[in-house]
Amino acid sequence: MNRYTTIKQLGDGTYGSVLLARSTESGELVAIKKMKRKFYSWEECMNLRELKSLRKLNHANVIKLKEVIRENDHLYFVFEYMKENLYQLMKDRNKLFPESTIRNIMYQILQGLAFIHKYGFFHRDLKPENLLCMGPELVKIADFGLARETRSRPPYTDYVSTRWYRAPEVLLRSTSYNSPIDIWAVGCIMAEIYTLRPLFPGASEIDTIFKICQVLGTPKKNDWPEGYQLASAMNFRWPQCVPNNLKTLIPNASSDGIQIMRDMLQWDPKKRPTASKALRHPYFQVGQALGTPQRIQESTKPQKDFQEKQIPLHIKPVPPSQPPPKYQSRLSSRTLQQSQSNGQPFKLHTFMVDSLDNSSEGGGHINGSVLPELSNKAAPPKVATNLENQNTKNRRRWGHVTKTAKSSDEWDDLQDLDIGSSNTRTEVKNEKHRAIGDGLCSSFESILDLKEDSSTARPVHSSFSRQETAASRRTSAKQHYLKHSRFIY
Image 1 (cartoon, helix red, strand yellow):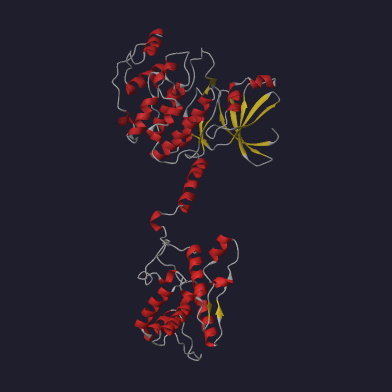
Image 2: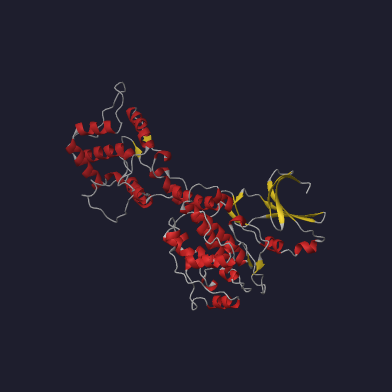
């Protein structure tokens, strides 16, 4: 105990007192329960029901036992520190809790209770004083001094739990009760959280039974035959009472809240739901994040990440019918003009051609012989044919659909989709450009940023000269086409 410094006493009970202390090593606040009776061996300590249960129970809504110390025949339980209990939380309220807060508190209580029952224990002393809190956001079940194993055999003592939260079978001195008595206590606690006052504040055991009858009505013998047997064994006569509507007693509760309380406050313990079944009640299925603050944070974080990563369907990009011109092609236009103005041939390089996907598919470098060479001489038809076939085979475009054959009428609409050409396409385009005239050609060059400065001498090209011979028309059309092939895809 020299590793802890006592600050003050938090409470005093039948079996021990609780002290607030601080760890000298970590500075962490802890609650130390000092047992009043003495223990002269560790074997005697290990037989304690509280220690047996707490060693097996590790849950976010069950108080955590950090350490057990036996010093000078005194036994100390070192627990995590909780600021207050549920009774203190309700007592300090000057207005009613909102139902969302009550739902979260009840969810945590039932989560802890379902875990306790699953591992073979029932508490037997659930009440607001034994539910520790860190505000309404975090609730933990504590004080397992009266806990028993569900597999243990009766008879049990008839005096368990505080009278106001005691189940009717225990009030009628039954010795074969089990975990449903915890569910009854949870129903009483839930009603008290809604109204901030106890539901059955009896002055004695018989008075408590009368108050239960005034709220729930006198049970019928067919509804609970075991209860009538217990009552006759102790010469108890049932008062004749008409049931009251819980909605009139708890007006701030929703219909689902009233229903789950009515289910948990059944006379017959066999008709009460288990804790795990109560958690599946519609009262908790409202889309509200429930549980401890850490669990709520973990459950909402992936949803936020998913919403940030999710792309709405209505903004899905649609591929354009024709891709925009490449930045490299526009930069290379002035280099091409300067090359032509000096009368030197200009060769397209691989980094300026939109055929990089050819090298990625084939796994090698683009062959330079495939690319057209711009000069004053007409390129051989064979080179143009090979270029057309290879680009048609390897090039990929947005929204492009490969077709096996096209008529000469279609090339006017699709002339920008391929760099290769044929005689038919050249003639059609030549006739089209001759019909448009020189004025349209000059405006077309200005749009594509192909015009040079006025200070640069511009050579006279023969691509737009009007000659009547078929050979000269073919040569000029081919030269005009190859001149503009730098921006054709």
